Image (cartoon, rainbow, N blue to C red; front, side):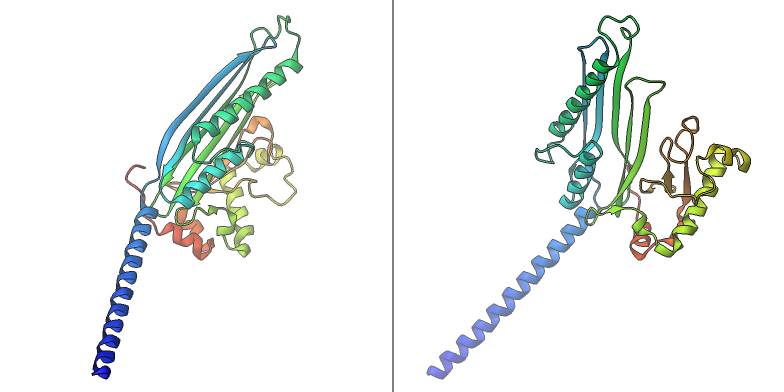
Length: 287
């Protein structure tokens, strides 16, 4: 009788173990399916606008910060985008990264104080020369393209704080949706970078100088040197990979910010496997 009881207890234990394992594996599979759905879903954003101004030293100081702030989606991706936004503005915000309004307000106040300090140093309070001047900063973070595999943001910062002309900064950043990794030149094969720089040079010639090599040579700051890739990473948009140079990076102020687009079909053989995987994606309907 003891042997029979022990036998049935053993069978019952095995049945419970198998059932429990199947339940765990099913839950794990469901979680993986849910994770896949979260990754492929569109990043939901909140439009945040912070505008402020002050006049303390005779010159009006104004600041505007606008952002498509990420609110819902894969946490790793959201956190990566939020950190990137904060870094572009100085990386001094100490609050919780999901509080977009607090973050942007912090940087708006910081920029406003900087502009006000410039106005203090620029001229006397009662000077008629500075009475109608405005020192300003306009900052924009915009989500410009998204697929089920990646999302691309564009950053634009322009303004004026005295001198002959203002400043203008613009570049993009692509993020891999599965883990929030920032996409850059590391998604290109190392031994293809020289070839990539040559393609970018040809693209800049075509887009901005109508293939006039003489004009290009006279405009570029150091044409004799190897043509550099931009200081900021290229970004993926609807048509291809965009490369953009900042003011003074390769040419005089009058040239502006030269940029070019290289179609995906051209750059695909130059990408790493991780880069090629990004191209095997489906654009979201909202683009």
